[in-house]
Length: 303
Image (cartoon, rainbow, N blue to C red; front, top):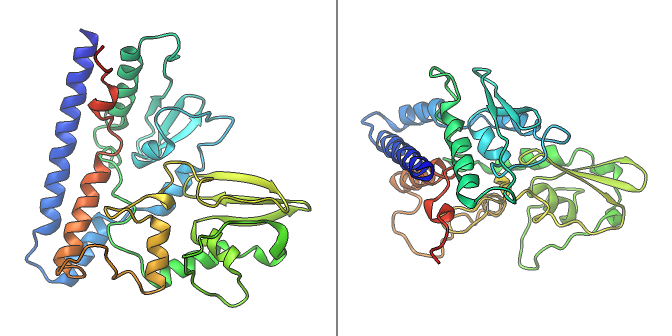
């Protein structure tokens, strides 16, 4: 009975979120105003507050956060910041949400997943009804950044490299990867920066790599190898893939290198306004359902 009730709540939540997403998609594409006015409206209602996201993500660190089946990105999407062990608080309405889960070794599979579903539902329902964050944040990329914006971000992550020698760490760069060039910056430093890593040298014999999109902070001894891709958290936006399988950082490189117009499948509408709006709407729908547990993943296989 308990499982049926949980499944019903889950199905109702899926239906509501799908309906909301479809309504947003329809509103996104319907407009009789000029492109300039549509752009202005989109910027006001759709563009994500990246700085607010980064500020929240930084709260998910030990000793207050030791991990949970609900990722920090899921929680940050709805404005929940970590305040103490198994407890998050909305940065807008200041409501609290308990994120503790039963020990999966001590309870049944159904009980554990029911508890997990409950937390996912409360990402929305635990807010005050008037809280603007209860609907969740828009996708990280509805429109592509410009080459200038990308390189400004890269240069910001390279501010401390003047204190680091070329041979102080190793990194494997794919042989077929063509990287942007900056005067005085080697491919090694460019590669880790385009992948979202800040590199610093707080003391002799050690380097610190930090990503402000997943709050990962790693220290390595000088001379060791650093894996710039797999050291990100699995949910990090820097390694997100779009509908064509292209990751966020690869897309950035293609934009800067002016190869973004290449598509593995020919589409005569590619590059047009209607094509960009359609792709944006598709990403919006995909991301809106990303924090919901798929019933196929939580239903135990029949014996």
